[in-house]
Image (tube, rainbow, N blue to C red; front, side, top):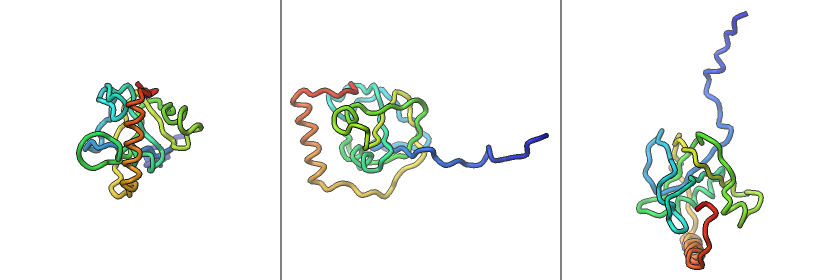
Length: 144
């Protein structure tokens, strides 16, 4: 019996939506890869790239990223294995309620969130001050 079912060719919904917040101006279809300077800590060459399943965490990523220009939030598809981000899940939010992950495999940009509401400037400045204090105190990222 010949199967005449074209369902394998129909678009499928995302199993999970992932976001990546940054200040980089990237194109659809581009790959986000390891090897660039990290936005945080000592700004060393990044061993991991990061994504999240919550828009709020992606907004923080876009707001706190180094660089010039506006924050950007991309919809991304991981191309390989992802794991919990230990800076958040081991230190601040056990159980990963922020749904923050890292990978050494590229993420493919499949869309961009154009309209999003950032945090109050006071909150952003407070978070930047806290990150700077960690850096001055010598607290190292678990991702370095």
